[in-house]
Length: 125
Image 1 (cartoon, rainbow, N blue to C red):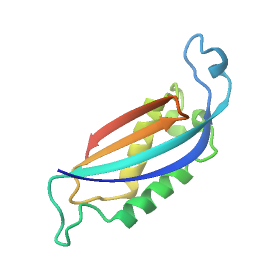
Image 2: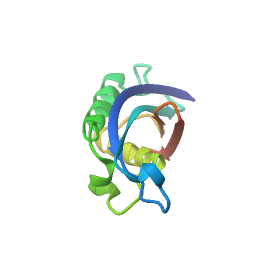
Image 3: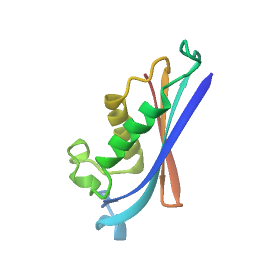
Image 4: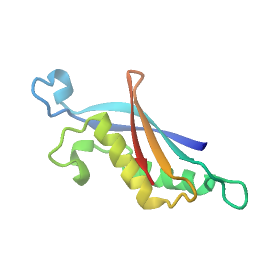
C-alpha cells in the first residue's frame, strides 16, 4: 500500500449547538490543520500514486472555501452541530469533488483543531 499526504493550515470559526455548550456555544475561532492522505495498492505507469500538484491544488481550493468562515453558516452544515468530525467529512467530500486521484483507492482526512484534538474521516474513492 502506498500513501501520499499534503496539508494546509487555516483559521475558521464556529459555535457548538449541543445542549449546555457553555462558552463554546458562542462564535469562536480555531486554528485548523487539515491533512489529506490518499492511499492505494498500485502506482500509475510513471510510478506515482497521485499527481501531488493536483492534490495540493485541490486541497488549496477546498481550504479557501472555509478559510475565515463561520462553519455554522455553510449550507452543508446547516442545522447540524459543526463538530470537527462533521467538518472533516465535509472537507473530504469537497476534496473528492475537486480531484480524481487515480489509481488511489482511499482518502483519509485528518483535521487538527488547535493543539487540543485531532479527528479523522476515511472513505473509499
